[in-house]
Image (cartoon, rainbow, N blue to C red; front, side):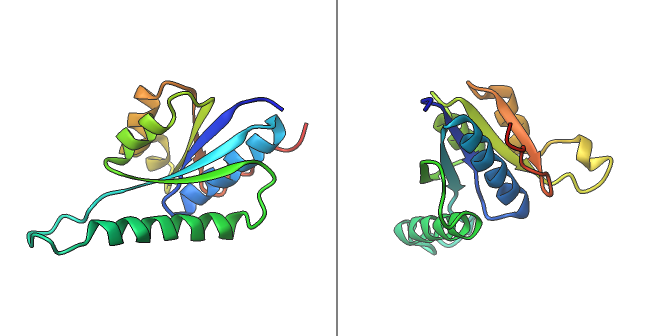
Length: 145
């Protein structure tokens, strides 16, 4: 088994679920592990103390575990879940240091919009220290070789 690691951004959206499926299938083919990363931020509100940071972190972690468990109840590769607080682009770039690959989902809603990347995908593709794979929702994971 290789020592590769795929980092995948997961936020419970259909496009991030497609990215998670792709990453898990690719990792299985290569004998690598997967790290699912959920980057969260405190809601912007004018009332100081309106949200408890620890509670927000707990909710983010629970949402990540719920999403991953729904997609892959019994993973066939090592699978780690990580929640981090901060800007998603910065958090994902930090998380993929030392990784073999970063996998992200993109909406690709229309022919024109499908040609454009979202700000997180674009920022990560420009700055990640490893190869970046962008997966469209509805994409089929790779077949076994």
